[in-house]
Length: 107
Image 1 (cartoon, rainbow, N blue to C red):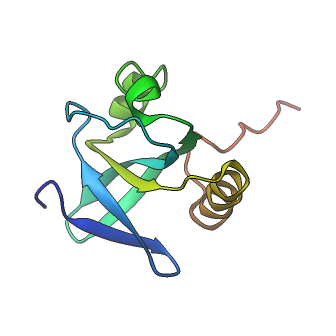
Image 2 (cartoon, rainbow, N blue to C red):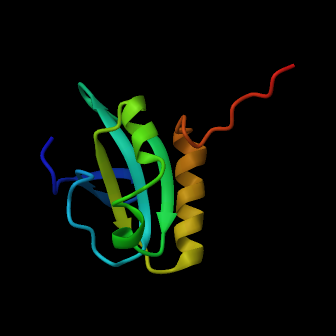
């Protein structure tokens, strides 16, 4: 899978596939830390931000995502904050990324 390609996660929304080391634009959107396993992409973490350029280069969860197996970041530019939040919630609900899913509380 080469960088710059796209992946359709929900509806007709095509996320662009990046490496974390890519240069990030100062635009808002939704992102997915993802890993590829033979034929399929798997979401490890879903987030949303007002600026990819400000938030992604030093993202506090990226080291954890790498430990989970993430190798790439999928992004979709979404200008409206409410729309970003809604799409992020839909992605989390559908794909249940392990880093977004709360740990069960001990009994």
